[in-house]
Length: 266
Image (cartoon, rainbow, N blue to C red):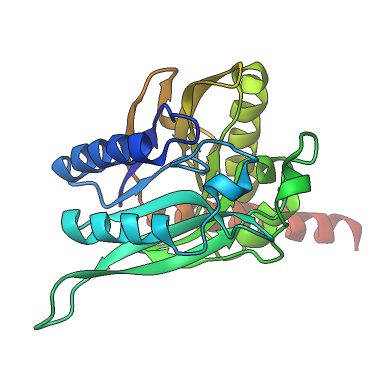
């Protein structure tokens, strides 16, 4: 799969402006024959607690990206706020679908609700927690999406990686905790032996600076592609076979160690 991460400077609570930016990113990705492009948390609004303004009961953001997915023949992942009451911080992925004889359309592959709202801040006061790990299949990968603060909870990654070969983390992660972001992304790749894609925003919002550092990390913890500070696309070709081979090789080594241990101590 040719994967792209859209590191964008989100204009706070301005869906119109952010839609324009998203369209440009999608055009660039399509021109480079990208299979799937992923955007940061709360893509069209920024990390807002103003749920009466940014929340949606009409699937506005989903329909916007479904139209673009169909138009540009590309799979798109994006964040949005579901509901105007009992709101949820969600991440959805839509993909083009061609039906013989019908006009091109797009379908939703997954809709994930953030399991761990940022309780250290005020997010948990405004958004309900999700209670389910979601998986979907695309381009030969089994993929699990998570959101920002979820990254600090390794247990859900361990559960997801029992089947997932790519785990994504859409975020609004500030620069002052930059080292945590990089270290945790690499750790999640190493301990789960899968690709990790961390999609972060750039720019400034409400006095906080965002370094971006969107990156694609391989199952051994190596950064395959990344971008610091500025807007742009992070692109890499990734192979599910890499995950399978590493997991099989590691399992073989563990089996050998177990056999040696048994022979020495039985």
